[in-house]
Image 1: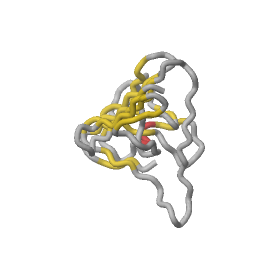
Image 2: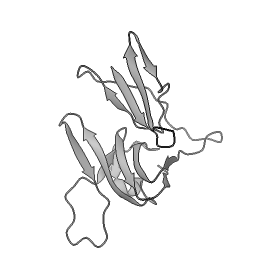
Image 3: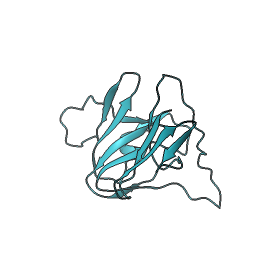
Image 4: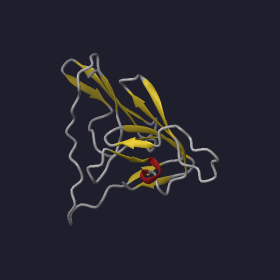
Length: 148
């Protein structure tokens, strides 16, 4: 891994980065958690596995909530179940969102994720599912909260 980035619009400048310096990653990004999505650049195609503790139920922990600002947000697709993917409208329920974009690394292409529009004459053929464990750029028309 050469570089890890995340975007947090609630902080000045928005970007947090960790860049390789010898055997360590250094920079403004000090920890990885399940409330952010990350862009990871590596100089080979090896699989990367990151152990981020999942959410566990119980009296000492409340379910997750991810704050969204108006404009672009880099959000994770997290779940409290073992679902591999689910409809984007379910995940983004309660948000006023225009579009999400996911990166398909194997195809090296952006994947469009659009909300289902009730008055749309013909159903759009774009992918409307999001995949657990992936990150997405989400454009929100107003601030809100994702409650997975």
